[in-house]
Length: 379
Image: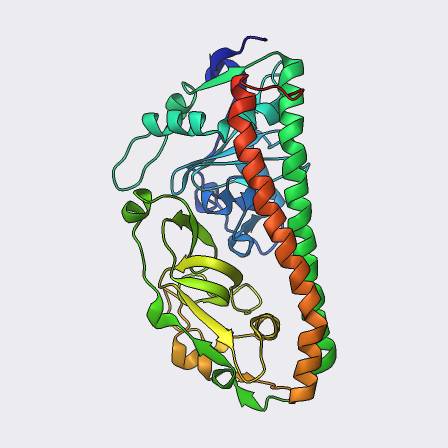
C-alpha cells in the first residue's frame, strides 16, 4: 500500500493571498453598483457561495489597487473568522476581490489543488485548525498557525485519482441543486402565466396557518452537545443538526428577522419536509383554504413583501404585517388545477434533494478513508 506523507501546509502552499485589512475607504474610494464581486467570509460556507444578495462590488480602479495578486482558478478560499474554517474551491476564471475575514491559498505545482481542498474539509484537518485557533468571543485563525496545519499527501497521481472521485460526487450534487433551482423557477412561471394579471382579492392571513408558538431556539453550546440527527433551521438556511425534532411533515419557513428579503424584495423562503427543528427567526406555516404548502411557496415566490419589513438595523417581518399582505386567491377550480400542475414538480424536487443527502453522506464517508489510505478507489 502506498505511503502517505504528513506535510505542513507551509510546504504545500506556493502563496497565501491575504488582504483582510483593506477597505474601499482606505484605498480612496467606495463600493460600486457593479464590477468585481467582493467575497467576504459571510459569503463562504464550505463548498458553497451563500448570501449572494449581500455581495458588494468594486470598480476597475479600486480592484487594481486592492488585488495586487489576483485570484486564479484552483485557489482555495478560507475564512479566518466569523465563520471560521469554511472553505471554497475557486473553479472559475472570474476575477474577484478578497474582502473581510477571507484569504486564499495557492498550491505548488507538485500538489493537486482539488485534493488539498478536499483534505482541508476533512474532520482531521478541521480539528487541527480548531486546536490552533485563538479567541473567546470570536474564534479566529492567524495565517502562521494555518500554515502549521498538516495534510496527508500521497503521490500526485494518487492525489488526482482520490480528488477526482470526490469531485465527481460534488458535481452530481451541484447538478441536482441546479435542477431543483430550475424546477422552482418553472413552478413560479406557471403562477405568473395564470395569475400575475389578477388583482388582489384577499389577504395572506386568509390562506396561511402559522405555528410560530411551537418554535424553540437552541444556543450553539446546546447544539454542540447533541447528536447530529435532525435538521435545525434558522431564518435563511439549515444551520445545524440536533438530536430531537419539533415538526414532522411538509412546511414553509419564511425569514422573520435578519435577512428577510432578497435584493428584489421577495421573502426568504425554505421549503422543508420530514422531521426537523426551527429556531425563532423563521415563521413556520402551511397553507389553508385550498392552498398546499407548495402552492403557498410559489405564491410567495411571486409576492414582493418589502413594504411590510420594519426595523432599520435589524430587519423584521412580524406576524401582523405578514398576514396583511394583499394576494390573489384563485377560485377553487383554478387552485385545484394549479396544485395538480405543480405537484409532480415538487415530487421531483424532493427526490433530487433526497439524492443530494445520500450523495453527501457517501462523499463524507469516503473522504477520510480515501485520504488516510484505508481504502483505494479500486476498492
